[in-house]
Length: 256
Image 1 (cartoon, rainbow, N blue to C red):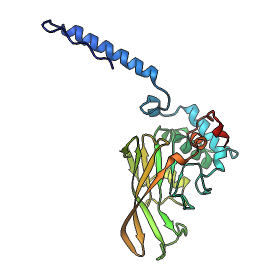
Image 2 (cartoon, rainbow, N blue to C red; image 1 turned 90 degrees about the horizontal axis):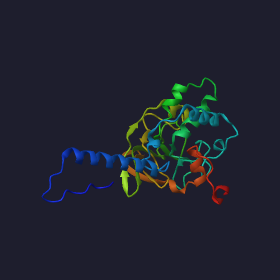
Image 3 (cartoon, rainbow, N blue to C red; image 1 turned 135 degrees about the horizontal axis):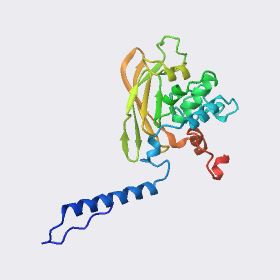
Image 4 (cartoon, one colour; image 1 turned 30 degrees about the horizontal axis):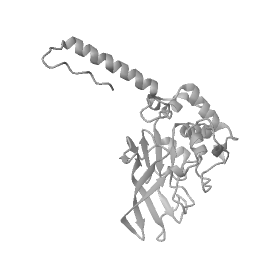
């Protein structure tokens, strides 16, 4: 932003002229910022706008397409219970502890579960905000399914808090909740409204660490706590792009 020059000492500056000059400079500065912005950068107004109906319908159709690659790719290693490449798990875990859902993946899952029958565009619009959801559920080790009571030899982790680490600072969610009908529908085998957590963030960049605090139940004790840090920069760039509904970027890494 340009700075207005100061009046020469001993002279009198007309207030209306000064105000007009400041207004003109602000206008020029704003126009320059708008021209210089690149889509997808933090602070871009496009990130804070809901998707168009045409783009919503395209993402839903992708979810209905059984041949779409997101139906078969489950991350590394393969975790068949989570659709999409953004499952959250530590290196030695076989099951995901949760999933990151940008706008495109939410609409993709909507189409997948509706199978393009009785699709309600009003419902879909509610999922089409620009924010990103981080979904975390109760984790059991060893895993025996949600229908069983916790046994004495199990270690159970229940998420209590989640925040992001990027750009050298901590970022807290704009909203958290333990009830969500969509997550209950899409991840019913994992989602438990008393022991799971959904955190909504304005954005979740790829170079992000997702820090989760857990309440732990082990050996009959439930006063223990634990934490985990999930790094998203390990997700291959091609799958990160696909999870956001982006076109295949150019570059040899796309063929990996």
